[in-house]
Length: 460
Image (tube, rainbow, N blue to C red; front, top):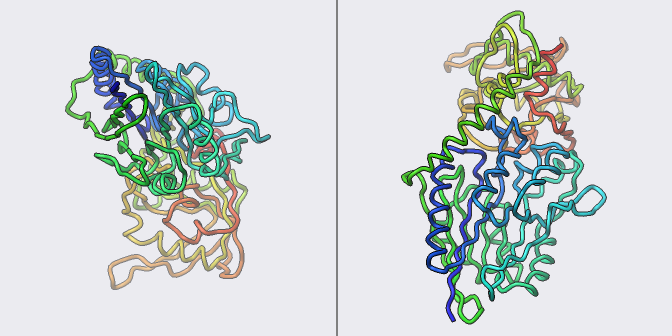
């Protein structure tokens, strides 16, 4: 007897709800079509569905995101780093308390080594009366961040190997929800036997027709809900015979007007909630300029230095998207101007390394660098702004300003001295400044974001 099972999947939506009305209608219509044809349909999300860049997610700490997944009938999800390390311990521990689907993440544990009851290593889902799918999940092991928040995250390969071997005894097909990235997915498929399908995420890659590695079909649907992935499982006599993959571009699909209205209502309610939380009263405007030192950026640099109890505060002005005006400042204002899930970080650097960073940060190339990722949700890097540092610059014949002298709290920068520098964690994990990325001593301050530290400073 032949059977067809369809697996639909999303990944790295990052609270980009602009395509969610299309996705909602598309999946609803497809579910009806499959039911009429007596075909099975399962629906999965592979993490980073939550992103606090959106006011709905910020105000509800992701719980509204879970309700949206419930409404579309998701069958299982895993967590990404945005669920795992941008929510504090309690918010993550309660995120899925109303979920109507299992959360599979084999490599997440409490600090004492036990599993949280909501995080299963795998789930077995009956696709039909005779065909069962074992769904295993794993998330990117940002160990230092998870430990700072009170969790333990294990090597995904070790835990996946054990979970796949165990679920293989109970299921006819093994699907891995992998928030690890394309290279780890390829390695996983090559090294771990028994995997039939890998639904990938984290690196925002697209695999329009999938990719086969060691008999496993690797799939991925890009980012921001721009695509929905579809995997077709052809089953013969209770055994998986063939697999194939496809992607659907949702941009031109019709919308669910009901979902569109629901999202508008959620956003209004969330913005009102954030606006009701006043954090400070400004006696004067705080302007921001991405390409020159400006008051608001200096306030943030000062706040970072004080919060981390460091010698120097250092932050790129591009993290502040808008100025603050005289008068009341609310959480809505701070989320609007600083929406990034970025944490303070303190790093120890030699003076010579610090000067190298300053020279690179001062270049026009770095100031105008446009990028996304590493927690940054802005447009451009912007001018690096310091607290505790004086720079003496000079205009030269090549048409640019150059650093001639650096002083730290009035004293010349000592190349051999070690300085404690308070900055953002994107420099600690990103490739922008190798001196920071490879530094041996880093301290992450969590769960506070930059906007929380700014709120603390403004309230003073």
